[in-house]
Image (cartoon, rainbow, N blue to C red; front, side, top):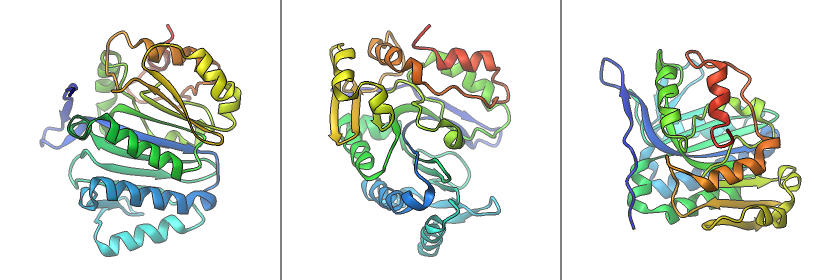
Length: 284
């Protein structure tokens, strides 16, 4: 069985893409950067080995300028990520536009890492391949919470992009809007209900553990899998969903409701009441 998802593209007047559909594998860790840096580097190597090292060709330097991700560039990335201060990392497929492949990292008291794939990768390789990658990354990283989801892959600082996101986000509720800079605010809270959901401690205990999740999530196609001690995967079906009834997502959202992260920083062009409505799209 093969699926096809909506092709969403938005470009600037010069033709460069600033928004596209994609798939994000996002991990949040309530550990300081010095404790997770080596795990993050191993996860990055795993991601590159899986998709191909050539998929990432550029990085953003400390001046905000793009530099080629050649051998010297990779040495620079490894050195910076091993430093104690949690340097933010942004690795890109393309120099001029948002590409399908991308890596983001933010370090601090809470650390976050996101690994992006184009939707075409999911369609061509199948969901089992994507799940395999997500699980491998989850085993590598000391996560508190994580998810894999269809998402809007976008340059959120581009003028006017938030109004476009506002329109598309309600049309496709199964697609995440992720800003990696929420890392310092999210703590151990889940961001929402997604296709693949990973929970560590203390959230897993607050949800009743593996047994409690299995008891409360009973719809067909939903699975609760213990990956290792204090780490669980909740999968909402074989394939991710972009739109429709999305009953498993609603069921999981109700279980998560008391624990959900709520955005406190306003996105320009995205009124707080609309953000709140989007965050509760599977609850109201």
